[in-house]
Length: 276
Image (cartoon, rainbow, N blue to C red; front, top):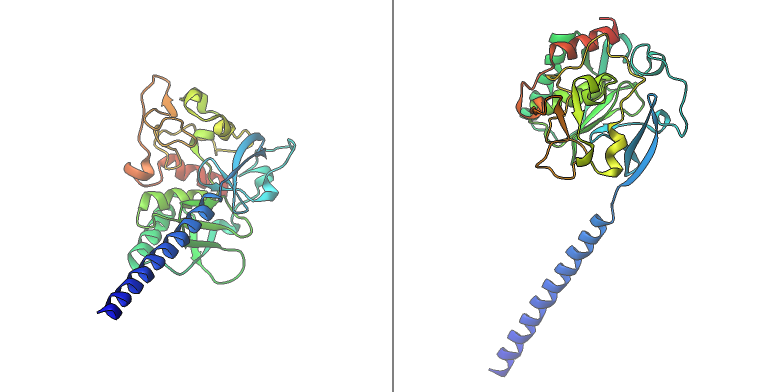
């Protein structure tokens, strides 16, 4: 009987020790995750001073645009507005976006991405071609939705919602070379930025990109590249808008709950930039 009691006590002690070790391991994991904080930096991009987040060696601008180091400068460069960006840079050759799928997508998710590509092709004439060499856009599962902008080395699209067609259409817009509609130089004639609801560190992320060419289009409230009034980058209070129309009214984000498709002006923008 004593041996049995001793065995039970030893077993209980082992279980408690195992649980304690497991908790310590999880606590250590949580600490390591919390230490991965972003760093807010500033620099010049397409003629404007912007703030961006430096996360894991990448520059994340206005929520989901990944900007390579070489496109951000510490002083204001000479800017032209021919084509997309300075001197028509960052356009995919022959209006053809080369891409490669990384592993990890389900068949349904892959089909959603291909459908989003077909949507852009049908409306703008931009072509998507699967390749395995050269410069290409790597499309991969991720913990967030973001994408590099245009034709750049190491072009990458991360998708945490690959089953959401509108999100994929939006990120493909970045891959083609489009920026957010709310950053257009003509935006103040159409919308108001609610600066008092945007954190100080994020405010220069709303500076207009004066070095962009928008293909003769005007501001488009139905653009797939426009954030909704209530899901803007850097919101202090998510129940209040970061942007409104001039009359104070708000709109939804098309990529989440709207048309989930490129607008007519989005397509025109791409056609003009690429000469399609």
